Image (cartoon, rainbow over all chains, first blue to last red):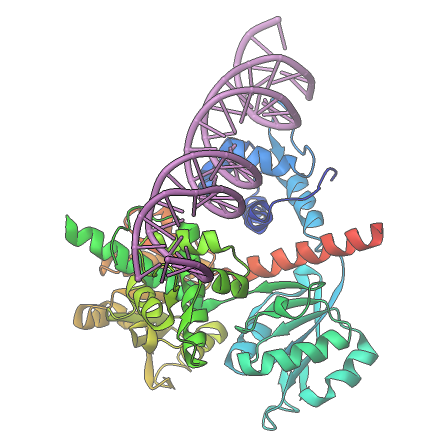
Length: 217
Length: 217
DNA sequence: TAGATTGTTAATCGATTAACAATC
DNA sequence: TAGATTGTTAATCGATTAACAATC
């Protein structure tokens, strides 16, 4: 891995997808692949595939293509999956519970070390072998265990105040499911938003657009 | 609403966000807003805001700006939220249950009319007042109720066979949480993917990149 | 060596930004 | 009318695609 210097977000967002396809290819026993083959599989162009990889250095070999295993390892290292990260999750409602129990954290180098909620009924119960604690214990917990990543599954109204507390405790990386915009308050923070309802609205648009197009014919 | 003709996906994906901000502004009692003000709030440029809206026709007024209420209504209609859609959800595991109970379907014109799972323990229980049925009842159900949208919360392995069945039953719109690529099999299908793990991997990259950048300083 | 496929430069395409005349 | 802000055209910027020399 070399180069890397101001990589476009569009490239970055393709990396996980490359990683998925390569993992699968490896599982299928495929040893090597050309940019053309990979591009066809992923509905991209060969040029784009090569350009993408060359943002980080040349992983291929002329006349041969790419070694699936090597390429997968390179991307794994680019994504930083081997670096250990400690995460806490706040908000153990429907969404929080789904995220906690559904996500594969370990293969990404993430250990979920704490879950918090203010609902007394949930406090003390377990999720993925982690005991749910009272949200007001967050400061104590952070002081002790120093998590670096927070997963926000709280309602918008709670997110602002909560993020202020987490920021104070030194947390700078957020996986944010709430509709609160953290970048309004802090500039030195990395936030990845998951807005499921935006995605559903996009689908609504596409349905409406598609149906209209069909009715025109 | 007028114009519209080959709108870029980048514009489409901004629409739900506009809609969110406008809904909020309206709730706050704001009556009018300029492209500049809206752009600042949303971290966009005024030019972009105006260009985006003008894909669908001019909703503003020179010297005044945009009426929050009118603009919100226009976008609502562009997104097709008033059109009634019938949805079924397949896979009532952690993720499916979270989606079913967490999502606000009604304001998007979607009614969730059926939920399916193959796990006998879940069959017969209720989610959001919908009884979970056996997955093998899907064909019967679709014949009777003609849903047009399917939400896929099943594992990758189940998704291919399942999508084939749903396609046969005439379903062409999919909100897909599985890692199976539906567009491989069908071209006349509209699929909106939600890949939460890709989003988390993107965050991993950004953490790794950010930490590296900091250590360089 | 000949064939294949990369890495990389150049050309094209599309999206964002800037500018400004139109007009409320 | 003067000031503000839109709608829209032109300029810029960035991303994708095409082409091809380098090389395995």
